[in-house]
Length: 361
Image (cartoon, rainbow, N blue to C red; front, top):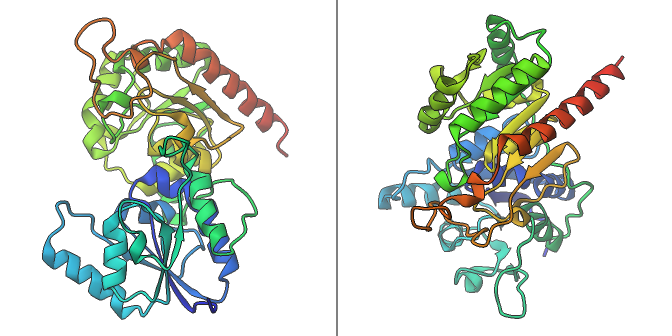
């Protein structure tokens, strides 16, 4: 295939997956250095990647669900006007291949799955076990394998994000208003999860952890919340003996602001959700609490992350809601994670961060 001059990359739909795709996106940018690259994605992933130099243009799929017929044809028309010679499909969906094909993209590369292999010019088969089931591999490696299939070699598996100046200034103003500019350590708690409640650690345990870090470490606490997660964040705040210095459930919030605040934090404690990947990509230490999901799908091999998970018979089930009946087995994957298990990991990372700061000039 001759070197394409115009490339469109379909981004993953989830914020965390978009962050895990950054090594592959960087490899594509370096390999096709002279091409015009467009990133197509939903608003969340696009905002997450904003500030990086991995694309020349962003094209938004407004993400309305269910998709209207008019919206579908509007999107295909936008793609058609781009005259793209190569489309790289990071999502696995049939729909992403269909919209690219109807949008007139000359050559499509992606994983041959979900019945779309016949539409791909450069197919790649996903790894499966002897029984034909998909092998659980990290999304970082999954996306990198597709980039490498196109000749784009990886220089690093490290996830990266940028903090645009406007977001950095907004975060600095909030921290100053909350008297957190000189507060060390600075800890963000992320108690929500858009995937479903099966990923969510109890609010009273987040509250107890926050109180312990305040009392034992003098920590400043930032409570993060997306608009749909304000209820659970407010439940954490209500259960704390010491109120959080900054509660984003009571303010306008954005992905850009979360990136900027996480970059200023020593530690982020989070469920398995997008904030985990954002925090790691901007250099914060991370404690991640896993319940229903399999950590192998999202392994990031980050030296400043500690994964807390309890091995129970029904986990990982990959379900949004616990299917166990009421009783001792219900939501046991998260119920078994106690504050006493999380606090030592959090303090270990705070010690590492303090040591790193001590060696800074």
